[in-house]
Length: 284
Image (tube, rainbow, N blue to C red; front, side, top):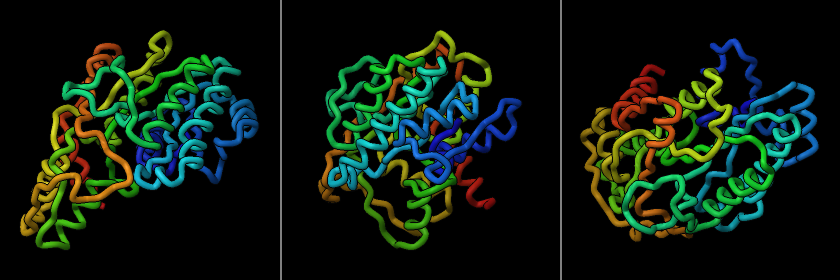
């Protein structure tokens, strides 16, 4: 069962599931309210679900600061419900978490066992989701990711393609560093683990983003060039020039060694995946 099936990652899982011999069931809020524990348990039993991939999340980082109850409900309570349902049927929960569970300590790539210190409501609620899974004791693979984009929904890549086409000049922050993640690559990693039956015995926390490192400014510059929007001048600026209710991590590069070694996954460089995504968007 895929939750949040209409979102960026869910849409990519839908594309992959269509070619699987296994039965993938796609749900979003219209089909199943995952904040309702009884409804989740009933759905799992009625459909004989033995794996859940939770792609549902409250991801509006700024809005979460003034809407913590809703963020908590989707990012923590709903996750606990999914974990409890999998525990009941001895199934496995795949849950997607975030680099925002880390704080701003240090500038070395984040490994899975580094100290957690979320800076805002979004990160705190996502961390409580991880903790809810641990407390439930269900079999689970938690994958933390960062800077997600795709052909679907609203995301940084699509916004930059639009703005660099419309404007003569654009300011983008250069003091936040991480790695963009193409949702198609993350979905393929999850899909490969499921289809290969590799999840059994490999439960735990993993990190996944594309390879390489860049700032948002670097990413925006590359997007503009690849999209052919070279008339727009992209300029670097500081984060404090864009007042925000939450402080974002200044360094959130994820170390992917564990997931690559455990599941023999090859991860593309962020630039290659960005070019692929832009090509697909132009074809559309």
